[in-house]
Length: 165
Image (cartoon, rainbow, N blue to C red; front, side, top):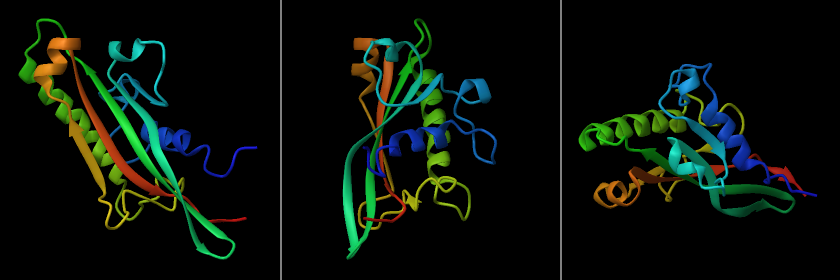
């Protein structure tokens, strides 16, 4: 039987694909800039063909604030892939990638007054002393020459709702 934290990646991917609120839509099908937003990294090699946000997590910390209460903390890791069109301006492609990452950051920050990603978590990107959101861009000179793409890794934490055990 899975524990209460096993669906965290799926819950976060669902928040990122949401498009019916005041935040920017991420998926092209809803007016955004990304082809794919999904939970987990696909193993079939198709990821480099589409602009994509792949939600994974690097760890779960099982905080135990009281004798029978648990508050899991997830460290999310989003892998971003942005294919560069052959013959396109590398500078223009990098700006489009920056714009798309900006929309992603706006969605991660959430709407004013709600840092729960629509009630999916206790709080997201609000963990003191561990930073809120970090974006690390890979060197475009390397990624464009090697694979005709731009890449970045986004990391942040989410506290899950407490439960008793």
